[in-house]
Length: 363
Image 1: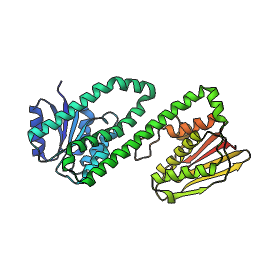
Image 2: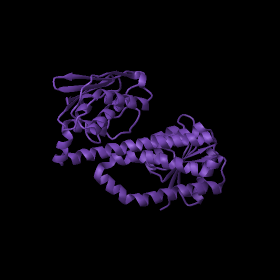
Image 3: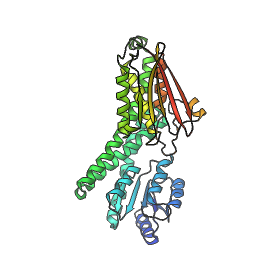
Image 4: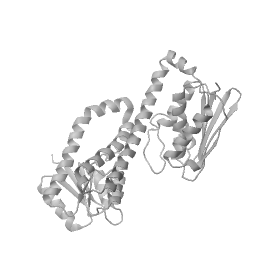
């Protein structure tokens, strides 16, 4: 069976030429005159490759790519832009959205067929090598993490290939910008892997009573210093230090430092990530009897009552803008706090904000 290619191009002459070239080369081709029709064709045909113009009326190539990457059924489809635009911003935007390659207009027939063959061969190679491993991964940790790992990996591989093949014609500033996108994707990958490893570390700890008991005896001598540093570090990632309101008491906490830092980092990170820049994120601690109460509140998207009740592994909440996330951050925090005989309470209102209160033993 020949490989399927969808061509989305608003110029009828270019569209017909591409159709004839690819058809003559033995590919099965479907065409679309605009982005809206193109999305429907992609959903219907599940192609092996999409060739898409960037500059189109109504819905441009970026909009098509965004829609494809958000549709789980076709999200991994290789996507190549056809463009006469060579500005750094256009290349950066496409690669950040998840484009796999660019073909610059005008191009020769030989160049077009070569780039198409390279991309299809690479797709086949990746599918062949990863099929067995993918089954193993999905059986252990489910489909959600597969998607979350694939997104940053696609960015890293795609930009890496672009730099390797096009570096001779790039400005230094262009290379630096692309490397920064690779770094950003790497950090996303690190976060996904970290949360997943944390999930299994907690599971293992539950089944190791001796190690758990030893960890329960650990004491953090200065909670104020540690909480303050964690909050500032997380705010620095989002350039939101000025949005923080910090009010802390000085008291020791009976809790292992590694897990304490992980919990606070995750919850404060969520508060910053899911609230608008310029709104307040408050980190407050106080003593209530023999417990310290740490409160993290934001003025962000918030959750519904049903969402709060359904907090669990791989239960993610759509922020209205991004489909990313495993839903592990708050779930891991809740399990860890309870494992060390503390409690965590989440009070949230959709569109108003979220308040997370953590109660732990004073050291």
